[in-house]
Image (cartoon, rainbow, N blue to C red; front, side, top):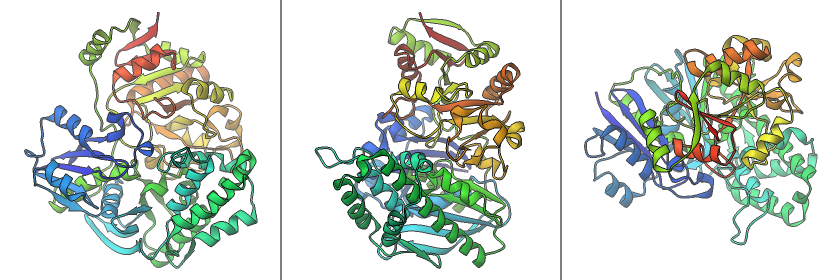
Length: 532
């Protein structure tokens, strides 16, 4: 059995991962260590994330058995960083191995990756079964188009440019804002035709090439003519962008099904699948039995995919793993917390954690910072670096945005007790993926007015995280008690960070937000902290 490092860097979303004896041990995104969001840093290297894993394990690139880097490789840097000991794996191969080999799926599985490009490809499609993956389709950058570019360059133009001609909204950071405002818009045939002129789809092919350049021409023209000055127009543009994307991807997956009808389980990866509304449309396809969205679906997930690829090659992994969680980052014990308290001379009121009290605090409307266990891997806070709030008042959306300095139109997400999921939503397909908050669901009518802070007001959808005893026992106990108090099996969960900041990594970040009154109380380990 082996110690395998995986690394991705030289572009956005750098990360480091380590697998030991066929089991994921650590995966850390570089932005969590640098404290600069990847959308603000177009090029980064997995240096601090590697140093963190090395400190936690005493495993170096010299003492590891394998170091796997995702292509394209910045050769001189890789040779220096790895001390000359390295393997390499294609970008989209790493995406697909990450998705399939964490899916827990048995039998025949279809794996699809699609993004803004990596190692000369936009997409690869594999047929998977057991430990075997067979590529059956590929989109090449030189001859095809990418819907990710349609989203990225629309995002960049939407709110204009700064004095350096950098978009005020960033690629790989702010696309979700367009998705969030899309339900507020309406169909516009002119905008829809613009998108048709940029990229088309037929017979598994997205074409023509140069999507980025054509999107930039259209979006910049609208910007300079003042079209985006109107919030209504921004919503209308987003609505048609979302609609067109969903329609093309539904056609693509239906065509895949026609070609491979025995494959009714699907796993997906790549940045395009951060679009949870599009994922909902795919999940609702009648022929699809289960959809799994790789939790670190963007390029941050490549380092773990690289590790899995090597472990499968070595025969150390022979079938897909099923993850109970993605808490693959650092954790901190009481000794670490006390050291930080002393070093920075924080002076907080400290009391023992009691589930009943925090459940009552949530019901009373307090905003709770929640810091437990290992940091999550991927873009979602899943109950380890989270802010928890009652979901019962629509005004909570504005209050939280003010506290966090955010201006997103997207609703906040609900944690949902597993046994109540069927009562809340119109379908219960793909619950494993929904442990990682990667798919939207339509809310049943009788719940919409009960939990308005976590429901999209126009299309009545939510992006739930299924909570069970096995995937997050401490949060499950808290939610059980809150349900006993309120009759609400839902708690609002948003990531523990302020606007423009990555999700927090260590207790100091959490204490700073408590000191600055971002949260009312902070739970770390077995203690609760408050300002005096």
